[in-house]
Image (cartoon, rainbow, N blue to C red; front, side, top):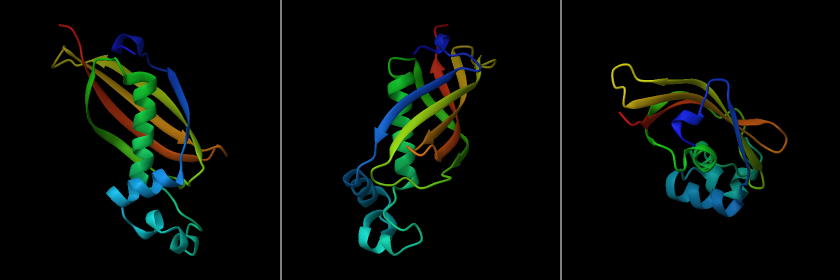
Length: 145
């Protein structure tokens, strides 16, 4: 989508995305090697009752879905950050995730009119409709002068 295609109040949906055990293990071993992400046997005895995906992995899945649904082919080039990031429920192998992204604000920068600013809220839900990710992001777009 191009920056001009976004508008306040818009909802963008994407998915489903099936999370596999192999993917959970691969991501965790590379980037977040805590036992409840990497050791299924130990995780079964832990507080979550089984293996769970890293929250950072969950965030990466959301980024993939957003890119496929909205950012691929756009003028997007950066993000200055997040207002908040929450992982209210764990993601488990076998979960099927869907994205709901709500556009909060779309505007040109007053100081840099060649930049478009998009504020939006991303939420991921599993197949039981439990939220597994909730964040508010700002994305920057390079616009023609």
